[in-house]
Structures are given as C-alpha cells and as structure tokens.
Image 1: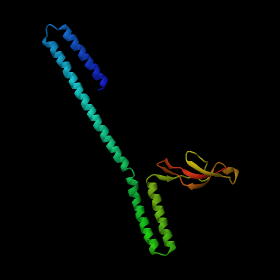
Image 2 (image 1 turned 180 degrees about the horizontal axis):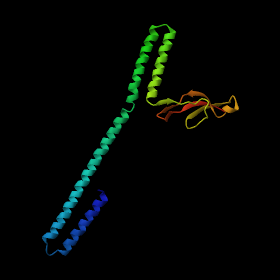
Image 3 (image 1 turned 90 degrees about the horizontal axis):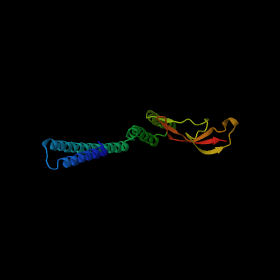
Image 4 (image 1 turned 180 degrees about the vertical axis):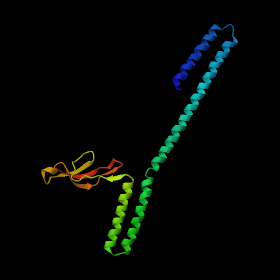
Length: 182
C-alpha cells in the first residue's frame, strides 16, 4: 500500500475521532468506542502490512543486486573454460616446436591449433565479418584510409581489411578496420 493511501486513512480516522469527541463530549457509548478501536486496529494492521512489504522489497533489491554482481563476475567463465583447451594445445605445440625440426609437421600442428580456436569461438557464437569487395558501411566498418580505386566499380567499396570485424550472436562486437577505394 502506498504512503498516500495510509495518510488518507489516517486522516479519515482522525476526522472520525474528532467528530466522535465533539458529539459525545458529555457521554461515551460502548458502540462508538468500539468503532474507534476498530479503526485504530485497522490502521495498525495497515502499518504492519506496509512495513512488511517495504522490508520484503528491500530484501528483494539486495538479493537482485547480489545476483547481478555474481553474474557480471562470472559472465565470461564459459568462454574462458572452452579456450583453456586451446591453450593446452598451444603449450603442446610449443613443446613440439622446440623438440622437432621438421617444418612441415610444425606447420600442420600450428594449423590444427588455429582451426581449433576458430571452431571453439564459432561454437560460442563468434562469426567473422566479410568485408572485402563489399560496400563501405559505417555501421560495420571503420575506415583507416582511402586509396585510389583500381576501377570505377571499386569506388566506395572495401579494398583491404586491416583488422577483421566480428559478430557475437549477430551483434557486432568489433568493427572491421578497412581501406576504402575513392
């Protein structure tokens, strides 16, 4: 119940009490006293309900704030745990680089690590943005520089990608840094 409603009820009770004391200044009847007691009891009950409701809301607010803080602190846990496997593969690849002189085997091992990190990120909803030979879009691209286009069809299009852009579940998490033809 709102404070306004409680104040209105309190005013009503006070008016009733004043009217009763004016009318019955000389004599008091049992039914009128019981009505005052009823209103006083109802007011006390409403105050109690109000206090309980406020305490319950305060507890809810504290609990929600605590849950939100915990969620923020552990939000990246899932992705970090999945990338630990890739880190283990990087450690194994580093050992192989130090112990094996065969370049073809080293290259193949490193390629496997790269593929694993790409597939792990893709499984978590990360997708690379395709930018080269597309129209320059300020919503997706950040132009690093403009260079003369090799032909008229390439004007206003992305000629080179300096840094890839990425989506996370179809939301841009990093804009692509690109070179645009002018």
